[in-house]
Length: 186
Image (cartoon, rainbow, N blue to C red; front, side):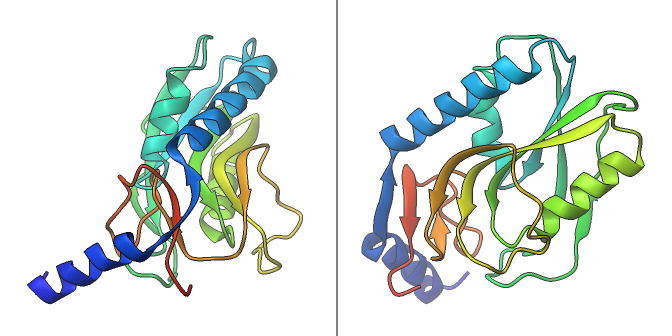
């Protein structure tokens, strides 16, 4: 990355609108953990975080789920560090056997939902007894890949803007931003 490109990445953060503070996001993750624990504590689920976006949410949720579970990850992407989606590309498929067990998929955002829909379908095709979805953010718009598909656990509903932070990125950067930010003008 050139110095000019890196300067642009820095500018995006400095000019971004803070939509949810770190404290507000942590409270949303805590609320999700309570709901998930109440619903799944006796189910012996397999929990998969979706890389890279679900890394932060998955890590924070897992430490708050006080019941037996197996945890792993999957890496499937449509964005490849760009701002526009492409076809689904598997980088790492699940390495834990989940046949006849419930699966909880944790991701950063339910935007249009193409990736979540394909991953959910994959888990069911491979024998999961059911699939539940937990997302930190559900973006509010009418462009969902499957309008009937809803996340089971949602931390925050958010306006239709280009957002980053807490696992969500801007051109591969700012997944580490301490809050949820919107790119100025987008």
